[in-house]
Amino acid sequence: MKLVRCIRGALWDAILDLRSGSATFGHSFGAALSAENRRMMYVPRGFAHGILTREEDTEAFYLVFSVLRPGPRARRALERPALCDQLAGRAARHLGQGRATARF
Image 1 (tube, rainbow, N blue to C red):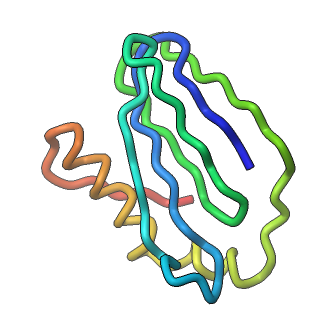
Image 2 (tube, rainbow, N blue to C red):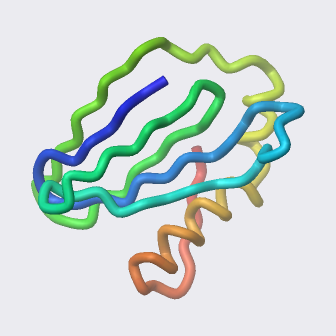
């Protein structure tokens, strides 16, 4: 589990549910974090996490409660381009860009 806050600049923070058997498996959520808005992102256990910086000299603060050692199911989920593209697409729409791709 993590708690993330942007302490300088701005970033787009996204999480992706990798918990097999979860009703929200494969669903993602993203939000703009900045030093100005002071928002935080909670990353639950079993979720992939990624950030995209939006300004130069952006800094993020992570409070990590435990280290995730993903099993084979989580690794297979990350190898699915559609899940990675889902996160990249959300970031691109948020930032006003047409299309983006990402790989974890």
